[in-house]
Image 1 (cartoon, rainbow, N blue to C red):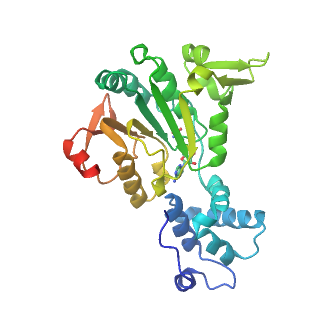
Image 2: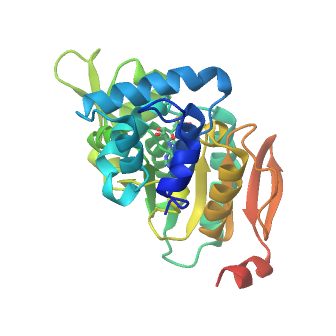
Image 3: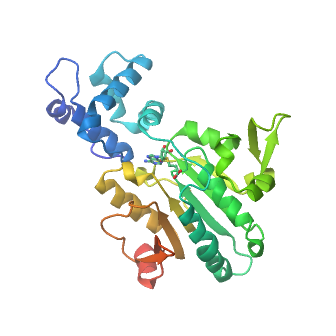
Amino acid sequence: MMSNTPSDTSFGAQAAGGADHVAPQAWCDLIQRYCGLAFRSARLADVMLIVRDEMRARGIASEKAYYRRLSNPSESAADWDALAVRLTNNETSFFRHPPSFDALRRHILPELRDARPRGGRLNFWSAGCSTGQEAYSLAMLAMDDAPLQGEFTVWGGDISHHAIEIARRGRYGHRAVATVPDEYRKRFLRPLGPDTAIDYEVVDELRRRVRFIATNLVEGGGFRLNYDVIFCHNVLIYFSPGAVTDVVTHLASCLKLGGYLLLGPGEAPHDRPPGLDTVSINGVRALHRRSARALEVRE
Ligand SMILES: C[S@@+](CC[C@H](N)C(=O)[O-])C[C@H]1O[C@@H](n2cnc3c(N)ncnc32)[C@H](O)[C@@H]1O
């Protein structure tokens, strides 16, 4: 859970001199503690516009009162949800960053599928899945691996409840599905209605294997499972260095022995978590749990 809830005293120290204003930096620190996001000073003014607009939208007149309320996330989940949606970037697409999917399809998936115990299922996690395209892309790839015989589950998690609702619905416009290879589109997406240029829906065969949950990576939340593959792309680029290290350490602790963590380009943490090796798979850098020591640390 978020820590360092400011006391009235520290709040006073952080607050700007104005009667009912809280210093922009204090807001940024609060946001960073809650969800990892870090903002450059050039963005502080935008952040403050969003904060104050959201405060008014929720019918709260005092900025200090709003700050105090958000300082206690267990009692302000709905407030945080509304604010986080406006502060985060939800941009996503199917098969975004193709080299990562290629490394998965050609190398990682065959290796893990052949190494799994008899009848074992593979678990994938799309961490920061936004509206679901990344999770469904992983599922399409896994379904297409004939020897795996559909024995897998993809878990998608995101801090935004709104994004998770859209992900669960599994309906996408024709522009959104443009990056789905034709073969997969025919097999895994069903056109809705007579005008096929409008919407597509993920077919049940795929949807059954994908589960979504709203979860905050900074709180160490998730599905409490061990994963074979974790995809975390275009999430950590917005985080402070400290939050990147904490989240990657948490994700690493959720990997099975032999599992892989694939981060987006430029998203690697400064310090590699203990027990993970950096590997390069056709130019894609991934973290691989292969040391027995890692398990000792974890269990
Ligand atoms: C730019 S999208 C990336 C989506 C997808 N991974 C991709 O690469 O296309 C970043 C997502 O991270 C989510 N996010 C940001 N902070 C988060 C946190 N602390 N916990 C979970 N999700 C978070 C945002 O809500 C957003 O949907």
